[in-house]
Image 1 (spheres, helix red, strand yellow):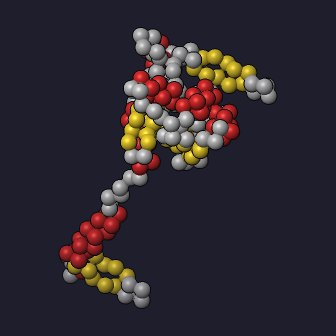
Image 2 (cartoon, helix red, strand yellow; image 1 turned 180 degrees about the horizontal axis):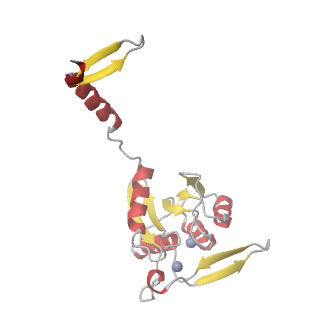
Image 3 (spheres, protein in one colour; image 1 turned 30 degrees about the vertical axis):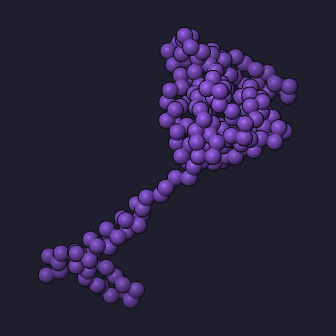
Length: 195
Ligand SMILES: [Zn+2]
Ligand SMILES: [Zn+2]
């Protein structure tokens, strides 16, 4: 008789078997599913960072395939992605153009110099539309490099939101010294080959 019971056998707190009819089990599952799948509206930071990831698909260098969005309040002013200057070959087609940099402390790092970076491109794109980025926030995948940090500092952008840390933090130091707030959404490190 139990084998054909259309429901479930559940042990209650007193280890007594309780027979739950299928209808009741289904209602419980539907309620649980509704609770777990409840729509979570993204914050503005999450929204703009989502756009960073969409735009980054246009990037032509897979060393981070970075993108940046510049926004003021709830409005996007501009975006940019890592890419070769117009008309120049793409890293994805011809490979990276790697330069080794030896730092003051003797450490070495490798950089692809074929491309213009996402942050600088986003600032340049805003300028080309005569949009002022002073006081705006820049969203990007990782800590800006030295060049981009200097461009951000010069632009008057007040806040930088990153997902991950770049393996070198000179850019972060430049932003800190300039009073540009830098926020990380995770404590992960951006990793790709030959950094
Ligand atoms: Zn490259
Ligand atoms: Zn950069």
